[in-house]
Image 1 (cartoon, rainbow, N blue to C red):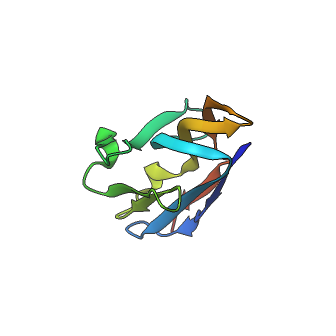
Image 2: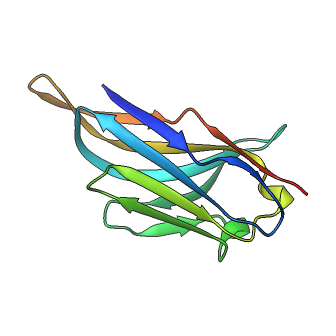
Length: 123
């Protein structure tokens, strides 16, 4: 089994910064794509940023120039550095990871969501 553990959310003032982390552990054979999504109250979950195994990235227009996604393949961890935070960034942030896991002698595809971490931007 593969597990994801998120950390790093909290309360921050407008203009401040936070760094989110999402670590995968377990019977991992290979991790492919990693991404961060967010869901604000009353809104649909939306993609914030994604990163491929070779570190190609993409961002939502609303966060370009302010957020940076990165990964450490040795630690099976993805990060989201959030700068110049705005009240509109307030949401629960979820990581999403896909790849292949070892189950006995088999290697199978998996896709998992983290448990979510709350980011609140308020003065």
